Length: 115
Ligand SMILES: [Zn+2]
Image 1 (cartoon, rainbow, N blue to C red):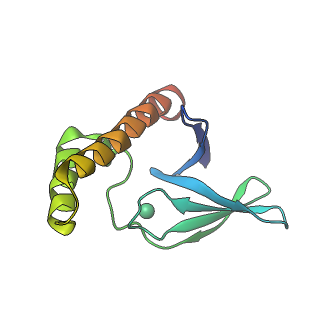
Image 2 (image 1 turned 90 degrees about the vertical axis):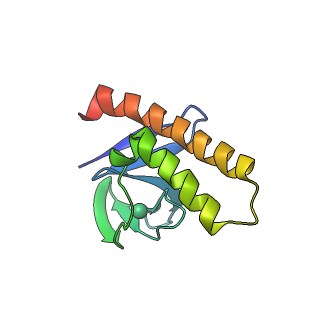
């Protein structure tokens, strides 16, 4: 069981088992490939005739619902600052906050259709 999510910018997301995927490509044989929206994660899934056909990889990160908490966002910023020492903190902050805004959009979706 999965759900489609439309972001405010019009890009399409797919929610499956509390993880969010974005469309990577539509294949000529009618299948489509979706990849996890977490940049560090390489999990993906394939849809065939609107059904989950294949799931690849393991998510080693918090799922969507857990990552909605502000505590986790702050933690993520801290971790990112440690990993990317050369990256300006303001940039990391802006990126993480915009990701958080996307998650809020998702939260509304979850309340309306999913929970
Ligand atoms: Zn993932």
